[in-house]
Amino acid sequence: MQLGLIGLGKMGGNMRDRMKAAGIDVIGYDTNPELSDVKDLKELVSKLEPPRNVWVMVPAGKVTQSVIDELGGLLDKGDLVIDGGNSKFTDDAKHEKELAEKGIEFADCGVSGGVWGKENGYALMAGGSNANIERLMPVFDALRPEGPRDESFCHAGDVGAGHYVKMVHNGIEYGMMQAYAEGYELLEAKEIVKDVPAAFKAWTRGTVVRSWLQELVAAALDKDPGLTQIEGFVNDSGEGRWTVQEAVEYGVPMPVISASLFQRFFSRQGTDSPAMKAVAAMRNEFGGHAVTKKGEKGVVTDH
Image 1: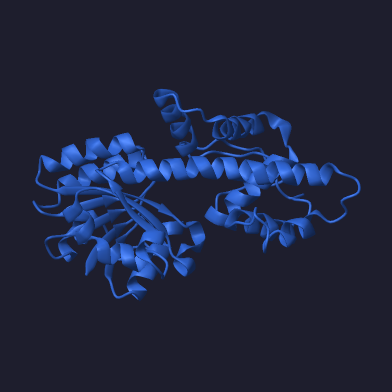
Image 2 (image 1 turned 180 degrees about the vertical axis):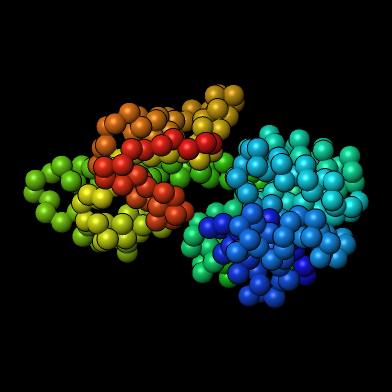
């Protein structure tokens, strides 16, 4: 199978390597010429045999829209575009309509796995028609971990459903991270507890609170036991916001996820709490998200 992949950053580059290892012929494009297989999108499309499959893995919003617009002028009827970035689900319907006017198919896919996905595989949440999802199944199977497909992949529903499920996934992630972070801060505050890193490491087997996120806290504490090199300044990807907005729209009580989102906002007001240092450390561990180092001034990123 052949696939065009646009965006070869922290996740896209690792995804290309994993797919190539599985025998998929991946032709990648990135604005960084050192990473790219082709000089531009026109050359990328020319090297793909129709009907073409093109996976877009770039930042959500204006960048994704720009790529979709350009592909709309280059691809042919029957080609398929899949947005695997962190786009808002409402953008998917717009992109589907824009491409459908030119006979180009569209699907979306939420991707979880961070910088560890190349080795461990990615969890995938897809939205689109049955035919388009089946068409891309060799790609999904190459990216996901070994084992039963339904434990790491779902066809969530129509176009937009994949990104919606990923949005809720990230909202849950916010709440889980905040709980671990608050536990870390309380342990740090208690005088009789002398080894907080040991406590988190001891929770990695047997306990009911063990998880990959908890393991990442332990890993971060192993590198920097007091998280002394990190400021408690935490950005958000935007998906937590969208999750809370949807909860308001549908009247779904969401106190934990909402509170965890507001704590991130609060962290940007110079509080530098131990809990938010732990959240920042977790984001860096699983996703390679930049941390604000001690003494630096945090900068809020776009969402």
